[in-house]
Image (cartoon, rainbow, N blue to C red; front, side, top):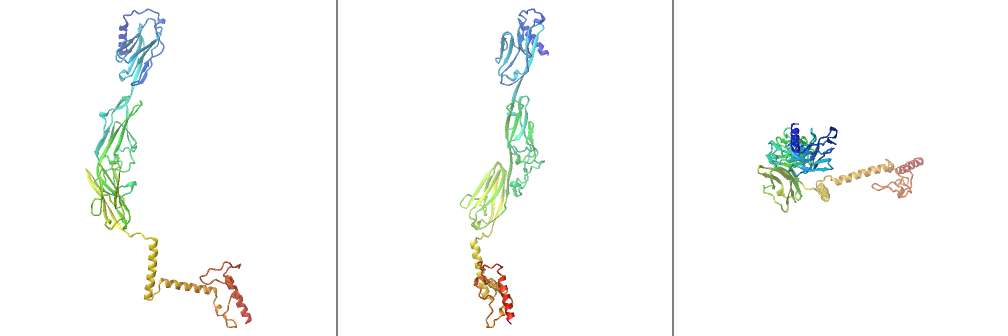
Length: 468
């Protein structure tokens, strides 16, 4: 209030040289509306309205209260600020225009009339500023050793004061303490399956990213016992409700010595087969990777060997394709990884197995086996599988004959001394088929085929007993 009064006195002093007319109280100037509070974004233009009735011979002035600066008096612009202008019309409107608003323009503005006592209206201009990150006070790219603590810093300015949020560029969770959250590297392979792990980095840090949060608020982001799984790009995002928000990217690199995983330590193969063996390694800085053969020599791409390598930030997937496995390939192959912090290797043993047998080979072997058994049995006088089969067939034939001719039937002889024929005058197709024959399906008999011979035999036996 003291500042406002001081500014008003300055204005009055500026206009006291002008004689003031004398009017009644009802005829004094009056403000039609209040000067509003305005919020404007830095760099934009704005207008402070001031409308006065019954101004008559009085004069209107604009004052910046905070700095006690007289800006305009009547139709004259007093300030030397080129961004300030006065818009007036018909002795009634006196609008103050602020162009390309700057933060220094923030504050109170007064529109006053030089009456006695002075009358005035005032409004506040709030200049808002989008957030901006202060690079010199913020972290750049960092490289640290695995297991150390690291702090990322982000400073921003703006009005209102910006809030700072951290998140990972790949949208994974941010783990603040790898040790407490179980974020450790163990002997784990692709998909969480346990595999053999070797190397100086085994058991240091890392794991499945299951804990933590997507976003962390605050200027400082502290990561304790940092692991390789926390390696990546982090985004510092500053916002204060005034668009646009702004972000800064900080890349965190975590160094560790090489480490190797072997999904399959034993591989069986036969001579002439195509075989692929596999090995996974991790290291940062990136490692040099290669294979060695059973003699310990480095393998280069050739007619029979094809090394295949695919890598990401710190992971390397190694494969070795062996075309037409040879006897010298049976033994131990190694995948080797080296960087400035150490080296490691993983061993894969290739052993020989029998080749698969084709159908032709299986049939040939069976025929040879049967033939060999038959010849051997003839020499030893022993029963062969073939003779066993013939013996079995004879037994089955005898069972068939017993079924066809019940006991005693073959001993019946007629008075002419001939063997009794149970099928007198019966065509061949009506007879029971011989052993090994298929029955004649063209027969028109109604009953089952095995009843017909029995009925004939029973009827013949009955007729013979009557004649006797």
